[in-house]
Length: 311
Length: 312
Image (cartoon, rainbow over all chains, first blue to last red; front, side, top):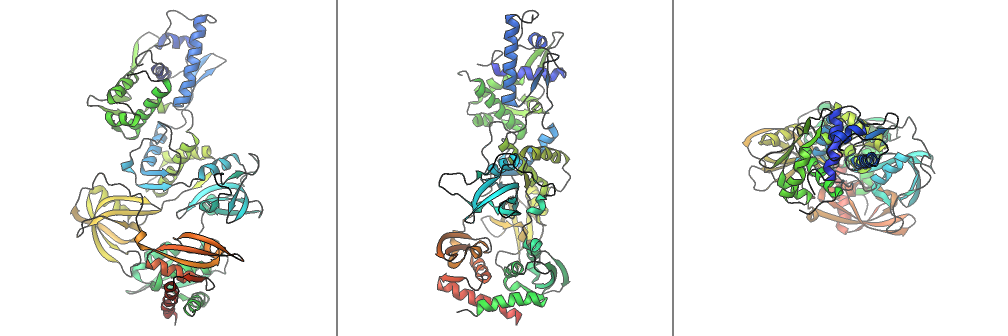
């Protein structure tokens, strides 16, 4: 069915009318002006015709809300209908559409028909991000402040979840480990399913059971670089790096260029986690060598000697 | 056409009008395919909605037709604003909010200009999602020129340090697409002296500049679902503690894991390429046993000894 009698058109006509009026409207206004509700004469409250139009408008308002997110609110006091302010402005919506066009997000359930960002052109995608499958469940738990429990590295963890985030290519949950009484980060792909078919995440208390501390810093919580949180005595390291490997070295370990020669570049950096520094240095093979301080040189030399001397 | 239910009618309209707004313009045929109708049926459904009529208080007939447009050559567009969405007071559903927040935060992280509208929208979404999210997409230094090459249809000259290479080499490649996936930006391009395109990691470009060769990037180039690197896979069997297994350098894949007792496990660990195998082996704690193959044990010793030479 199309044309004037189709409910969908009548309902959208009601929205267009409310927008065009730019002020609240009465049931009489609607009945008089909007095709589909139009009544031959004035509506008399309490009459069957008045009741029919009132019910029809009430039903159509529900449909506008359910299908289009449009709220035409009825004021009991002055018996008028008025549009509620939009959630996003048009400019905000345009910015979100541009973001959705550029950044495709995988791993979240397919959006419903017409959902914002659901119809963007895949050909314009520049960035593809994958959201871990547990992110939705944990987002709900964080939003409702519901403690959760899950199996992680063979241990059942009881956690008050604070935030979700990524570091490098992995998703993490940051939250208070109730048993340890401290903030911990959990890699989502290491959360295991206790029983086949069961959800790996279970509620571990009622909603509203905790508060996220006001001093909690999500940005800091997901900076998982060991050289940031390591607790070895801080030393200033000097490393010799082949010129072509300098960019990659600094991307991986940070630091500043202290000297530059045609065949080698000296980089200086602060080190707080010796083992992590050693392993990340070794990723560059013969193209990066630590020169100082002796404590770091010894860490690398002793490790290599132990491996080289094995049988 | 058989009558559509109100639910279905709305679904068709929402989808078609979302396509019109989010793609700026959409062919009626494409929109019809997206909603599972033939173009004529969709046109019939759209036409009354594009020209909604009502009367003013003085009984003048008003037609709200300015916002959507169905052109004579069968293209649907939003001329100014999608007024139905302009009126939407309800927040997006939780999954949509999370998806928009993730894409918006990522966009924000590599934007080169201020994004006030996006910032405001993300503040609303953060409250809605009520979960702090930290999403970053790092932009390597050569990304702008790589994107310009793609945008302008020009070749890109760059010094490239390939994975595992000792030194960078000079390359020039015409652009097919620039994209970010698996946490890295890629320049998909064909070197001038080759016939097939390759994927170049933009963060491995040491220097880059626009070249002189004009090239129209193929319009149908897609972001690959995956790279087939199986031919380069190397697997070793290790005996180690669970903590040592968790601390192995990435990237790697644990294929099999079985307990040995006393907190130790035996695991088959796979990496891609010779260099990553050398790296994995030389990062192992000395008490980790390289159980198989025997060549891996030997490689561990020789590679460690080679690196040790620099410290003598």
